[in-house]
Length: 87
Image (cartoon, rainbow, N blue to C red; front, side, top):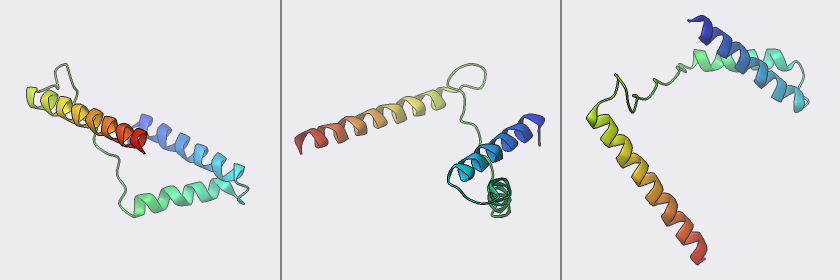
């Protein structure tokens, strides 16, 4: 695990502990650590980063797929908005 990953995990546990404390739960830091340990025990792994849309890691197929996904998402959002307006 890289130092950056350790720092990110520690920050995530602190933030989760703060939420638990705001909710009034007892021993929030221990609960946050328990949640993190259970996630790891259940096989949680960080997602792989998406391919870069430009630069040395970019491919024509990746850029095409990204454009198609963006177009589909925009089309779906417009359809949802149109349906909500007609209701």
